[in-house]
Length: 328
Ligand code: OGA
Ligand code: NI
Image (cartoon, rainbow, N blue to C red; front, side, top):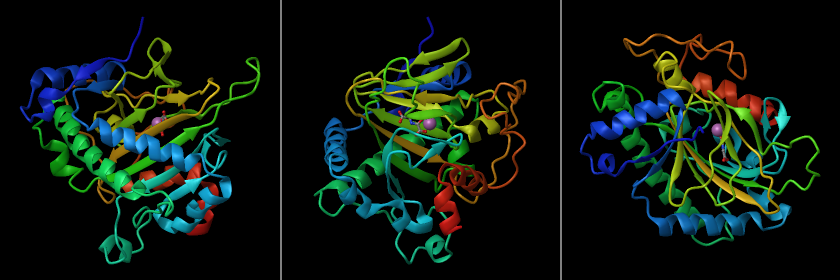
């Protein structure tokens, strides 16, 4: 029975440079590209608040939610999209959600330079503490991202600050809150994916999910469930770490199917390289494993040349074609 491994990272959080934890992370990245973390120290009250406020937001009528629609976020790529508004592999997903990123003011140099994916967030003005809670959660996730990247560096036999020094000093952080409505079709209908099969773009995703379940991971032996585990996060490797490690650490395909009769909330946080950095292979002694034939989209992350910004924009424009036309 294949299961996504669970790793207690409390030693790493205490900054002890714990090699035993790093080696568990390394093994999980090679075998699954996915692992759960516990012992992460993220405040449960903060998480509960985030969940409650998100439920409040999605429970509103569509018109109210559209007051912060993505079209109003412009190039910064922020705001709400309704069910069917986002595509994975060209097909609409059965989910609605809100996109957030680092909160940057008009005077920030990257905003002044009109850089895509940089700017200020759209928050609902009728839900008190929503803004504060999301920004605090993103701050905590950013710290956790740095901690995990230190562990990942150690697991590759690199110095702890390898990624921070080269790639993630000013990480591109994206945060999404998704609401997957129940799939009310008959069981023998074609499966309607909450999110279709895909890989994530950057280095590391840290996902908080509610207690519904529905996340599936493509392991070497086939699709396996990654069910909710109380007070854990699901972490997975993205395309850029796959590229940096020559395929040693897997950017593993995953998907979501909500078969329950109630809504599923999830909170993926993406900790990704600095926007303008060029992502290059790390000189590792391991064998290069190009997975082009097996990859879900038949593309190879190893062929790609350019900055992380170029890569992520090419991806985002596929999931929101309308928006691409209007802002780029
Ligand atoms: C994603 C993703 C899973 C989930 O946003 O990339 O895979 O459970 N989300 O929402
Ligand atoms: Ni994903």
